[in-house]
Amino acid sequence: MSVTTSIGNVFKSFRDKFVSGSLTQPASTVFTHLNIDAELTLALFEVLTAEAIKLKWQDNYLALDDGLLLAVERVETVVLAEDKCRSCTRIYASHAKYFPQGLSEYQHAMGATESEAMLEGLHTWVKMDLLALLDATREQPLHCTVIEMNTSAEAENSSSFRQVILGPVAHLASQPASKKKEEHAFCPCCLFTESMPAFHDLLQTSDFLGIRLFASRDNEGKLSADCRVNGEDFVSAVEYLKQYAEKWPQRGLEFRKQYVVVRTSRHSVNQAQLVQARQAQL
Image 1 (cartoon, rainbow, N blue to C red):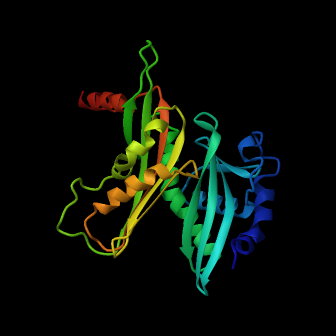
Image 2: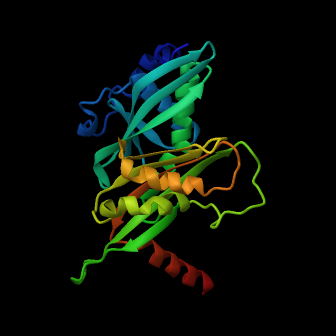
Image 3: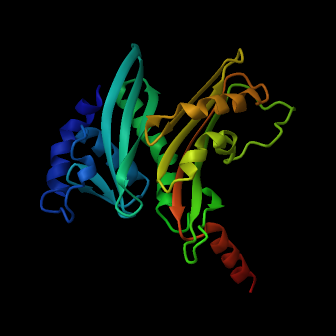
């Protein structure tokens, strides 16, 4: 059963109940020319609601109370077997203050049906990417580790900080961990710091960036990697990610995947944490 079939039947009644006469903001121009899929956007609404995230249906997109605007595009579904499908969707996000120009990222997933595969992709995005995006739109991130670099200019009162918000890491290995340890124990920083030279020029800008990092090694030692910045391929990081995967202790088929967000802020996360620690000691 397709997502359109399974969700489309309830879409009209949902729209009539929650949308009619309830719009409080004009439609976001970021989504105007996109091929937004209403049924998949509704599916994302239901996933977010199940996670107790407050939001509203706003024209053809979702408006979270935190200020994020979201919409979903259907990309493709590939039927691999009678009970095996591979799907690809694309979620667009925007925030009036932090990244009004918008950004996007793809969701790849597997399932017994098209519906199951696409819903799995949406669930994974909420558990991983959304946490990083939400923390990136807070002055003081709540859940994610932050790498902070002082990029202050010489002029007075021009302090700024380039901050890398590290989302959760998806990690899978087909064999138990070996006794041989990695030179540096695997942590949320590793995927980014190991490929950091590739992002040197981007880190010198003030652009708001959403970065997908992926590295894998199969049972025979074959390396694979992928990197995207704001949804677009970023090949400069691929070789660094492969070199990182080559150093992993042997655990059969293994992959590590993460979404990180880079922003510029005049507020130092590290300094705020020091202040909070001192206050707690008083």
